[in-house]
Length: 332
Ligand SMILES: *[C@@H]1O[C@H](CO)[C@@H](O)[C@H](O)[C@H]1NC(C)=O
Ligand SMILES: *[C@@H]1O[C@H](CO)[C@@H](O)[C@H](O)[C@H]1NC(C)=O
Ligand SMILES: *[C@@H]1O[C@H](CO)[C@@H](O)[C@H](O)[C@H]1NC(C)=O
Ligand SMILES: *[C@@H]1O[C@H](CO)[C@@H](O)[C@H](O)[C@H]1NC(C)=O
Ligand SMILES: CC(=O)N[C@H]1CO[C@H](CO)[C@@H](O)[C@@H]1O
Figure 1 (cartoon, rainbow, N blue to C red):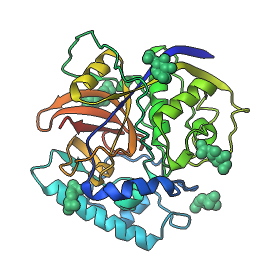
Figure 2: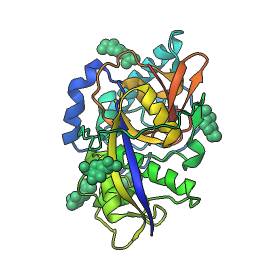
Figure 3: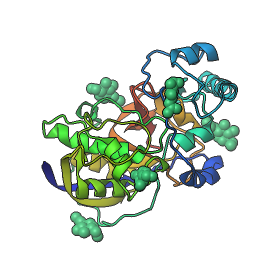
């Protein structure tokens, strides 16, 4: 079993949330976020646009409303509202990003918040003195995506914090030349510091890996709901040493962390626009608070002619979402 002696977990605060969603956010941490039969989560289709009607869309994503979180009628209603909102957004010349229909366009924004996020912000920052990023290197852009496997899909289970954690471990594996895939299901089933599909904290997930290690994702694959722990069947193949948590607030410190340290596990607030992001630089003027509810990985940054400076965000909603699973988020 490989053991890394030191791992810094950087947590950042993105100011990105709809004012209207503030009250709803916390409530979701107590609700059931798992659904056992998300057969649609891994459908991968490219080139879908926002002009499909419901039946065409449902067929393309192989939707089956016999065993789903809502009825077909309610799904169609939500779909139509989403499609209208996407169309209106995409027709506005002032927007710096485009939206599209996605595999979960039959969920309302409120339902997306129940089933698709799951970051519980315990506002812990054990290690308050941020390391001295003294390299003083500067680059106009950084893009670590080649050092990650393709974006994975959490399905209808609020365990984004596990995917963000595992993505950092898989990055470490790639810089070590191992190309391992690690098991989100291991943490989902066995990390009792967190609450599986009901959400959790990045720091706890990293601590689980420190204490118990993590299994091979190819032999203990993702199922999308909290099942019984089968760690005894699938022993750990990797673990980490020390876990440190820091809050990186501000663009400068995050830039330097990305250059000196590599990708950063963090969290953002989920907005309606985010759920249907397609391309361009995501900027949501409704964002005002520091309430965070969705864990992601910051895998780079760059500058776009139209949208300006952006962070490159790796999400855990599959490769069909966004830019092959990524989003460019404005520095603003
Ligand atoms: C999941 O859905 C499939 C197809 O609709 C169905 O055959 C299966 O019984 C469902 N499983 C559960 C656990 O509901
Ligand atoms: C981070 O904080 C933990 C808990 O207080 C401590 O054990 C650890 O030594 C600290 N690490 C660093 C690098 O400061
Ligand atoms: C990052 O790199 C990947 C793989 O090399 C590439 O496909 C992607 O377009 C890049 N993203 C950005 C924002 O530059
Ligand atoms: C921003 O908030 C306003 C008022 O709550 C709402 O009407 C609008 O749709 C929101 N914009 C986006 C992009 O979600
Ligand atoms: C991570 C997590 O929440 N695991 C739970 C999954 O469900 C079992 C059985 O209900 C719990 O014991 C685990 O704590």
